[in-house]
Image 1 (cartoon, one colour):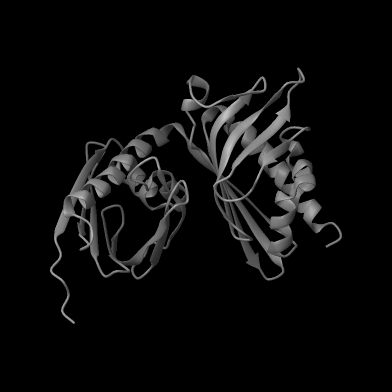
Image 2: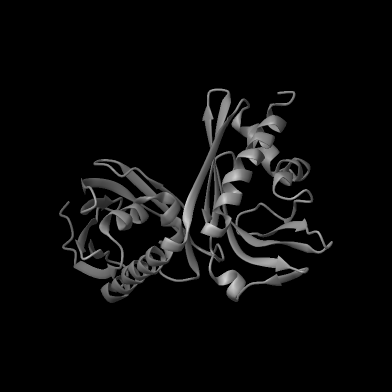
Length: 294
């Protein structure tokens, strides 16, 4: 069968960061799920990315109301570190991306073969919107840092997943953050969930969040959207805007009868020291609970 004659479309942007930083933000799955959407009513719920020749990628793109979703997936065919990416989508369309650095700025040029269903101009607008969103996120990301924590737990992954989220044991292992730590809501994908604690004045404070993705025994992503202060939800303003949309991701990997639990979180400089000190303590407590009577 002859291949269709496809229209080649090109979009561009300039990011005010050096190519090395742009490359990391473009290719790291934790970053990808922050920026890979054309509009606020869409998001990427999870990303898998094996950035090497013949490596595969899969970005799960979904409407936030869960009305529609699809896998954006394909195979890499050419990788030039910090300079060029070429891949073929699973529908056989070709995509080429170049990263050209000049005076600590990076010009990203992305060329793709248009599909035959939607108007070419509409496709161009969508890809340009994603690129614009990348620029916005990348330039802001200098204010955030990804913190990574992990532990090996001597239990099957099913027990670790259940113990981490079950209401009574959740209160126990997260007591390292606050002795009255608890949650209200559901772990179901798309659900609102509140992470709460009582402060020294007896008032409830915490986080207003959303379950971005939940794949049982494999992956959990929490998107933080606002705070609770003096028993009141605050969803915008100076206290929230600097980190709204930050993520807290949990990955579960079975290693024989053990589980590798990895956590990746967004942090700013203000909380880096606190998280770096407290997360290992919380994970050790979770490990002890899981391994008790295993």
